[in-house]
Image (tube, rainbow, N blue to C red; front, side):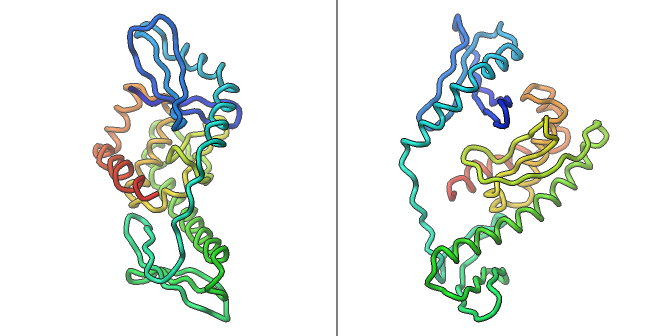
Length: 241
């Protein structure tokens, strides 16, 4: 099965395409919100893209239905001393410190220090940590985009803008019409070389907006070990989110 993506309005729809001996193009949404499309080898990929796009309203409606009925995962975070937090592929222990001064988060020598005026306030600690992660993500993702964009200049791809969002099902998305790369804020928990892989993957979509052989040939050329980086994301990072 191959992963593909189309844009519907301001949304990105990811789907898995399976080529098999079927008469019609079929589309199904699994309970885990995975979108699966099946078609025979004679159906052009452009036709499949248009078919999925024509079902955009139905897909968005049904995905929302699944989200509404799925039980919400309760946060397992407590924001207490000794709790482990991942940052750039490494684990850091949390130390909560009461302060009368400015509230902030710092990391140093294997620890993340959370300075908060009211150590009993779960909501305040959560907000401080989320803000710290997002600030780090903005800086490090931009550095990665600056670096990876240099590889794409000779292919005529200019550096796009960067946007961040918490996403459930993907690490990043290329918003071609907006000339923007959208990255999952949770990606800040992965090693930098894995962040570079996601950024380069999305940049190549500005040259090849599909997952064709041309797309993967360029990915292999520019990052021969991309599969190892992807494996770390899929097998190590995802399990902790």
